[in-house]
Amino acid sequence: MLPIPIFLMVLAIMYLAAFGRPWAGEYSEDWQEEEIEKEMMRMYRKRKQKTDLLKDAADSKILELEELEKVHSQRIKREDFV
Image 1 (tube, rainbow, N blue to C red):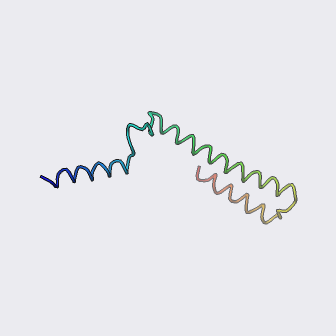
Image 2 (image 1 turned 60 degrees about the vertical axis):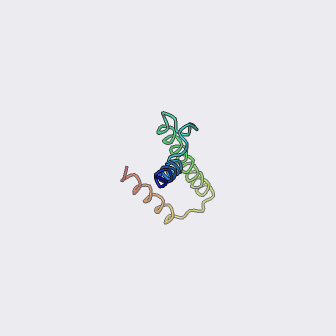
Image 3 (image 1 turned 180 degrees about the vertical axis):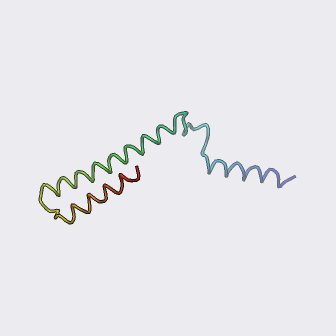
């Protein structure tokens, strides 16, 4: 009889470690939309940072033709997968 309560306690601890406390409200009903919004904001900030760097480099005439071609080819490769 003793192993059954120990097994249930271990099972409860593993559940809490995996999914968190259900009464804490960590997951709302629209948690998927919130996660998508967070990811979209992260991608937007990353893309904006890259474009700002490219604009700064283009303004200061640092990029040579070879570097511009590399950037352009990377854009084309990314767009092919969309």
